[in-house]
Length: 328
Image (cartoon, rainbow, N blue to C red):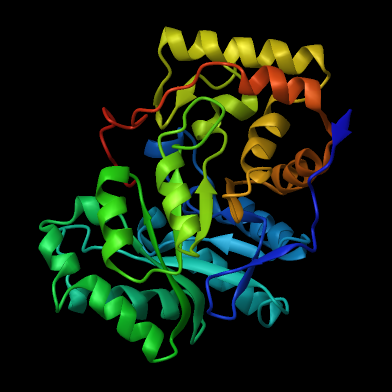
């Protein structure tokens, strides 16, 4: 028995904001050219072709940030919007407020500067979905959470109508959960922590979903190893995959091969089929990858394969616990 969970027209409401989002979001970090993180460069021509393919796809949703490629991601998206004479109708941009990347200051004034930079780079006067980004790297978390902090400023931006919905996008669950409990976010983004290999974010997703937040699960391919395979891309959570991870991925690959299903399709649909997940964020850097994402999302996968995959052991710890963060 097979089940197809792909519905291009399906959209999920983001809390009670009036905003709705598609079930797939295309991630724009690598479109800003971040070779230290991803191991390869993306030039202007390739980025433009990819952004155009996203605009032309049935999933009108892209995620970026002020600090992706030190502004290049937003600038390239903005250039594509300008060249097209505007965004496609109903298209949703998700972006993020970022700390000062030199001083790590992340107070309210920095948050305001970050938004102003995003609006200018994108060439828009409103961002549908805006997240607080990576507060764990701030010089002092109290700068983020205090009365004059970045979160308070983000709330004001929503009140001013500059954004429709506000979210939290970060890595460390132990930092995110207290913020989700204490502040009225509409959405969240977690990356690398809810995949075929890892369920670190599961309890957080359950909490957020129970509070009515829209959960966005990013990096379902765990930085590439679950899309291209252990031999072609031995990179896990932005780090070289160790022997144990490689062995586990090979087991997943073998099960997928038995059922004639591409590894990446199973990794993508693992996220898409979960009722806790409103939208799955997939990084792409070529038009071909946009097309492949649509094909993988639409591929019927046998229930027997799901039973086998879900019976495999998985990690619950933080897969990025030893990662040395570099934004380039």
